[in-house]
Image 1: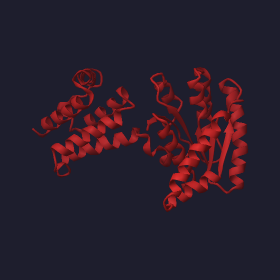
Image 2: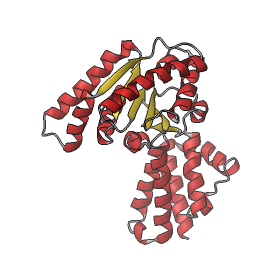
Image 3: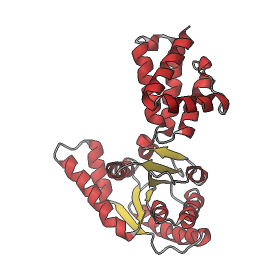
Image 4: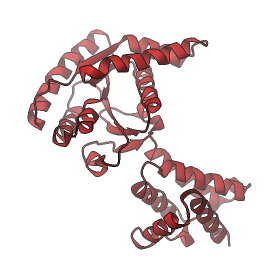
Length: 288
C-alpha cells in the first residue's frame, strides 16, 4: 500500500512538472528501456535506476525534477523520515542527485579529477569563477585560468564584481580566502596552442611545467585549473580541436607532478556532445 501511494505521488509530481504528454513518453522509456517500474520504487536498486535514468534522459533538468519528487513525497508523507522505506528512497534520490549536481563540484574535486561543468547563464558563470577562486584558497592551490586572451578581461571583471559585492558586508573567512586566492591567480592564453591532440598536449605540458614551478615557489599544494578554451572552441564550431584539447587535458591531468584538479565550464547548448565529454573527463559531466 505504501509503495503504491509513493508511486502515485511521484507520478503526480512528474505530471505536474513535465506535463502529461512528456511524462507519458518518459514513463514508457523508464519502463521499457531502463527497466524501472514505479511499482518497485521503494526498493533501493529501483530508486537508483530511477534517478540515474532521469539524469540520462533529461540531464540539465534532472536535479530539479528530483527536487520536485522529494518535495512532493515530503508533502504527502509528513512523517516520511519515520518510515524506513520512504526515508531510504529519499536518501538514494538525494545521493544520486548530488552526484550529478554541479553546485558543489568546484569545492569537492579531488586530485587529478577532470570534470565538465555545464551552466546556463552569465550569472552562473560568475558563480563558477567566484567558487573557483574560493576552492583554490581553501586547498592552498595556485588558481590557473586557461582561456583565450579576449576573454581574460571579462573574467577579471566578473571576479572583481563578485569581490565588490562581498565587500559591502563583513567578509567571512571563506570570502577572505577567495580574495586572497584572486591575488594568486595565473591567467594563461590558449589561443596559440598548436592544433591536434599530440601538439596540444606538448604545448600544455610545457606551460603547466612552468606553472608548477611558480606554485612550488609560492609554497602552494597544487594547481586549481579552470579551462575555458574547449568551450570557446566549441562555441566557434571548432569541434575537433575542442575534443583534441579535452583529450590532451585528460592525459595530462593524471601526470602533472603536483596535485591538480581541472574544471571545464560549458554554456548549455543542445549541441553539446555530452556523451563525448563523459569520455574525456574522468569525473564526468555535472550541471549547475
